[in-house]
Amino acid sequence: MRGILLFLMLLSALLLSAEEVTIKGVSSLPGKPIRVIVQSDLVSGLEKTIAQTTTDFKGSFELKFKLDDIAYASIAAGLHRTEMLLSPGNSYTIQLSVKHFEPVSYYDAEPLTLNVLQHSGENLIRQVEDVNIVYNAFVMQHFNALYRLNRAALLDTLRQVIATTVPVPANDFVKAYIQYKLASLEPLVKKMTKQQIFESHFKSKQVLYNNPEYMGLFKEVFGSYLLNNKKFPFTELLQTVFEGMISLNTFISKDLMFKGEDRLRELLILVNLNGLYHHPSFSSGSVKNVLDAYQKSSVFPEHRLIADNILTNQQKLAFGTDAPKFELTDNEGKRHSVSDFKGLTLLSFVQKDCRVCDKELLAIKELHSSQQANFQFYTIATKDAFPYYKSFFANNKIEWPLLNLGDDILLLEAYNIKVYPDFMLLLPDGKIGMAPAPPVDQNLEYHMNRLKRQVVNQ
Image (cartoon, rainbow, N blue to C red; front, side):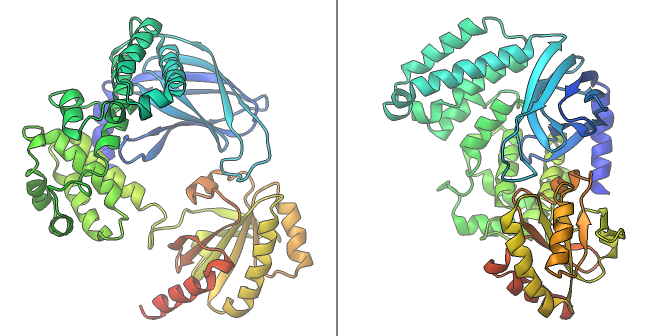
């Protein structure tokens, strides 16, 4: 409820400035979902789908949606992705095609190629592409001189080359993009201290939350600032995080570098809390409590959103959270859903042409004989693999349900399936117990017994 209310408040404000974007085109994948996915913020990395449709039988599609600021978006055709820079009020005509090769994973199987055929408005895409091409070529050509010999004069040369390539930046986004992309070389090449970088590029300047080069440099320089700063003894930092937001703010205020820069100091804290959430020395509960406090009481609306997004992202597939819902048909035509999983459950995912999947299923079959009284077993096969595994189950007398993923391919994203086979342990009533779970030869049964004892002792 908290996240929904915050989202609605920010959405109502953003819609006042948002402009419509149109993307139309053709994909080499007819009948598949086409999505536009952006990061809600560049600290948490939480993804949100802002537009979705399905390609027709020819692969054609059209999307219309509101956008309030320039943003890098993932254009997804099925589960294949590519990046595209979008600007509010613009229209784009694009072509999407998949380069086929033998995939390691169904989830990120083949790269998606994007060809922008037409676009209106500023020449934003071309300028950013040109900057990236010039920058990458220059850094590769002068790698030793930059990183080993620290020839700082080369940075001025690169700045001049980019200025020749893009003499008049299309807008403030491109101008800042160039500035902070060049600045990303300074920490190593010029041997600049964090304080020097802060004073040169961040102090008394607007915080560019949506510019990837600005945020990339900030996270690179200050991402581990609290852990690696002699001003913040580790044991004191642990205690301060445990005590909460007010104590943490007071503790960080000892660093005079951020004096008068409340917004930047709080942004630094959020970036570091994101990294500390699963740090073995810190209680995730303590970090969560601090983030909760920032989400509720920060004077900066951007930071309330970032804190909420960190909590949402860090708790995805976390212990005790709801497992992503699905309803799939088994090899006998019966439908199964997560709501049917009343007890402990071992969920396995397999794909086509996967010998390791076959081997693991046979190993799980041995587990089934000893664990079927305590666990339900289900295997989900991708659509193209289902006929093979239907025969495989029959030939090997595997007795638990085999489910057909069918066209519900976004379920693989929901469960973060990237390598096959993959496993999930679910608690009663469809809660996450362990995601992912290890294979059989890496102590899967140990974790099954651990969860069984935990449930019994509740």
